[in-house]
Image 1: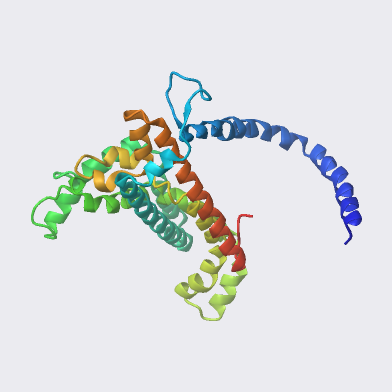
Image 2 (image 1 turned 90 degrees about the vertical axis):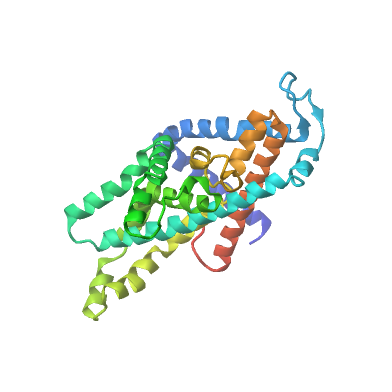
Length: 315
């Protein structure tokens, strides 16, 4: 196709685009508040990134600050604490990612296999409820359950698995597992919704044909259900890899303490401590930019790999 033909084709598409836009004017009007929110709260604040290249002092204007270039980033990558919180962030995020996917997919498949509708609805409701509890309340429940007099220690002692109660939240090496388990307990029910919705799109005739051919329940899951969920799993995996440096804030902040700080502090807490406690806003902003840049690279890389492998992708 020549350049002139390409321009003519684009010009012919423009009236169709505006005509389609006019036909969907109600949907366009409904999207305006969201677009305004997106611009005001997601794009306009990006001007604040200039703080990372300054020696920021709150008393001065944004463009009256002392510019220091990449000094804050250089200090960031020379700070041992930064590498410690980066390790904690990646490990906790990976644990949440793996646990979250495995448990949500497993629960969705198990719920789909239930034939007793009332029991299925009860299980779904119970699994959803923790998602609507704030992390302040959820952290209090976890702390109570893991205390020396809590239900976990009582059960383990009664079952003779341990001899004495363990101070679970007082030992850093247990913290990552506790966070992963708490995240699963709180969000597994909510995370199953999209998988259950994806399962409903699978043609029931496939299950009927497999059953006629003699396939048992596990074979139907392995050869029909899981392949039917493949595209959804890939899309969600790509999206979650874009948040690989966001392991959470509330659970780590609420459940962490001085005895577990080497394992509980992550990038979000690092930014809070430097930005608010130490008033080093420039370094905190530099850490935030680093987190965003790495997340963006992970998102593009995961999407590119999915495209090369012929899998579903975001764009």
